[in-house]
Amino acid sequence: MTTRRLHYAWIVALVTFLGLLASAGVRTAPSVVLVPLEAEFGWSRSETSFAVAISLFVFGSGAPLGGVLMDRFGPRRVLLGGLAVITSGLALMLTMDRLWQFHLWWGVAVGIGTGAVAGTLGATVAMRWFNVRRGMVLGLFSAASAAGQFLFTPTLIAAGTGGNWRAVILVLVGAGIAAAALAALFMRSSPEDARTTAWGKAPSASAALADSRTTPLREAIRTRDFWLLAGSFFVCGYTTNGMIGTHLLPHALEHGFVEAEMAGAIAVMGVMNIVGSLISGALSERFDNRKLLATYYGFRALSLAALPFVLEMQGMLLFTIIYGFDWVATVPPTINLTASRFGRGSLGSIYGWIYCAHMIGAGIASFAGGFFRDHFGDYHLIFISAAVMGIVASGLTLGIKNRGVTRPIPAAAAAD
Image 1 (tube, rainbow, N blue to C red):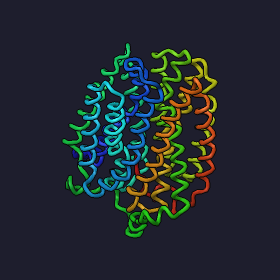
Image 2 (cartoon, rainbow, N blue to C red):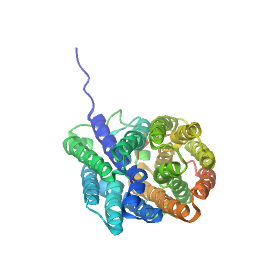
Image 3 (cartoon, rainbow, N blue to C red):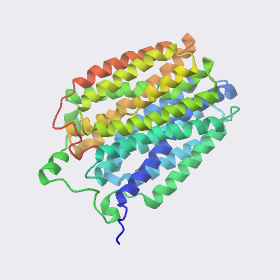
Image 4 (cartoon, rainbow, N blue to C red):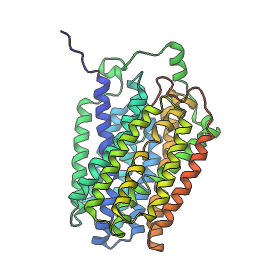
């Protein structure tokens, strides 16, 4: 009896997932460490939020560069380099006692590292290693962010009990080292490096030609669709990483929610995030991706509009379920539309800039949340602003041109 051997593409996919998982875990830390840092060093919420904003801006600006570096040097080297920078920045945080050091180590170093790892890594791996089922792989890689939230946030909250933010950082350093070790052992940049071929039946010559179209960036930025995709993804970053990822836990604690209960609620959000990303990956292969995005942004707007009025744990759990399902569901359709509109051959560079817009939105929301809280006493107005922007994003996505198939070019989904 013969035994089917696991295709190496799935080993690469697993290592990529774990790298994205570690990066996502690092990005969950601000919501856990902001309050302890403020208590120990006397920093204001605006000052600590500014470090997070710097990190998100650097993260976003690093995404296009990461795409170029992956095209030139391959995902393996970029992943290892990114994890090394992340781990070094975190380790240096353990020695800090000045605000500028927090801005430098977290804002710049961690921002560069997470941008290199998470920006376009999944998209590049999916394109290089999979001929079919890219939508599923896309959902899997998108789920890494959700799984990072699900696994790391409760763990970091437990590690940081009593305001011990240094223990939180040590957990993240360990995760970074583990992910780097696995990448060094098993990651390969292309099927050729592993002496194999991409997984799945190769597309026909005509389909492969359409799939590998390239659009120079200078041409892409002159199109309406590029700015509609970038604008809607700006809103995505504003309403997720920057807003909820940074400020949900501090907001909840300031309104009487118990830290242990919030750890459970955030874990629920993470589980729903995984479910939502996987379902979205499957739906993106079958339905008009523009309508999917409009639906996702609409539900996100409704949940954010309700958040200021959530005062009991039952309501918070309901919010985390609805919002969690929607968090990264926007990623598969956005990448599918980018690939369909501009071609797989230029996905890395063009999606890198669209992702940059995402993280600019996240950085603005991170700082604005802290600013509004310091000056108005709560986060209510900033949550309402996010709801309004969600409605705007729904309208933007419906204006995107439906070029070719918005299904992933029967084989053309990429991953975040």
